[in-house]
Amino acid sequence: MIDSRALGSTAHLPCGWFAIDGAGCVIAANAALARMLGCDEAALLGRPIESLFTLESRVLYLSHAVPMLKLRGELSEVMLTLAGEHGPVDALVYARREQRDGGEAASEFVIARLHERKRLEDQLLTARRAAEQVPGIVFQCLRRADGGLAFPYMTEVVRVMYGLAPVQLRADGRRLFDAIEPAHRAAVLAAMAASAETLQPWRAEYRVEHPVGVQRWHEVNATPRRQPDGSVIWHGFIADVTERRALADASQARQAAETASRAKSDFLARVSHELRTPLNGILGFAQLLLVGSDALTVTQRRHLGHIEQAGRHLLLLINDMLDITRIEAGKVTMQIEPVEALDALADCHQLVAPLASKAEVELQLDTPCSCVVLADRNRLRQALLNLASNAVKYGAGGGVVTLALRPDGGSARLEVIDRGPGLTPEQIGALFQPFNRLGAERGPVEGTGLGLVITRGLVELMGGRLEVASQPGAGCTFAIVLPSVGPDDRI
Image 1: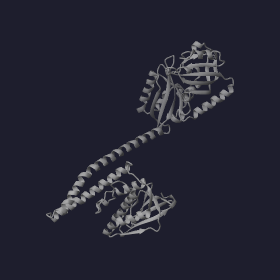
Image 2: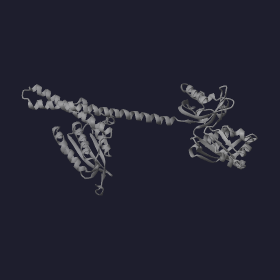
Image 3: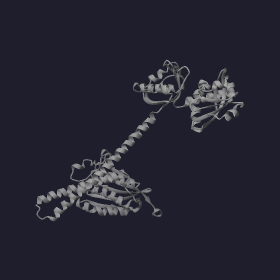
Image 4: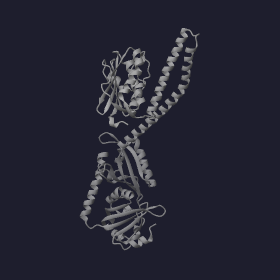
């Protein structure tokens, strides 16, 4: 309720004053406002605030003043036109919104009559032009007591969004609803009917056929008011939300993909852990039988050898799957520190040398310089071993694999170069697909198809990148590119 002291303090103001409740109805007014409008003070009580303004000022008040008042709690020098009994009254409006006792919101307005008619007209013209430049449609929609629809006011943007002129909708508002796709039209009209019944805001999203033949999504938000004759009038806004919906759909799809990826990673991690225990048992007993029994025939030993070989291949696959799931889940711990790149390549050369010797491949080092890179020492060794062993097994058609170190600006390139058959652009595009061995699964070399995926993941977690260059018949070059540091930058 308005404090009686406030009424006493406004009674003799030279300007108009009134207050409204949370529903927007006048609950108090002074004599100056009644004189401006040409009516009694008592006639103002209970009236919706919009009824105090002319049609255009109602639209400006509901589309601009109300949101600003709710957002900032006050209005300053908003120019509106009052609907007086003896003609329109141009005025400056000031307002303040506050919470009353009991939590109910109420607003107080001060109305100062504006005698500078030309200034008001210029300002209103500016406001109308601003409304026309809004990307959506500001409108007033009327549903008469007989069910007929009309749009007494609508900005020119309707021409762009619906291909209709405002004058076409003033008498027959259903032309706008005819532009809504039939599958959505009934729901929009039902939401409108429910809003008219409950006087709750009307909100709906729907798809329309754009005038140029493109389907677009629109959203309507409007506030209803019941009129004395039983009709309902809405003041609202129609916006194009096509891009917003596309972003929301993309975000939802991304979240679903991330959820599926996490579920896959959890499943693989659990299955891998469960498989390792019985598999280690199988390998252990196969080795015991091979070592501890002299009664086995040659055929039995060969069969046990097959069991052990298959078990080790399966264990390698399980370990690679665990690495993949840990990388995807971000659970790989990295200890980034300065690492001598030359030492990392030398370690790789030493570890891969037995495999190269067995495959009759010459393993070369080409390190004309030395530099320090920022990396995790163990993970860098793992990544280099994956690349070098792949080069020996798959790409050493010319019998030579080279481990090289090249400076690259503020970075260093640790390269593994082979002289094998090379790769086509299509094969390079599929190179980092899990379990895709590019047809090598039909050959004699064992593998899981996960090594390169793991290597790229480890390199990226170290802040670097994995590059590949190849042409059919010209071999392959895999390069781990990592940031390098100078002597003064070392820890």
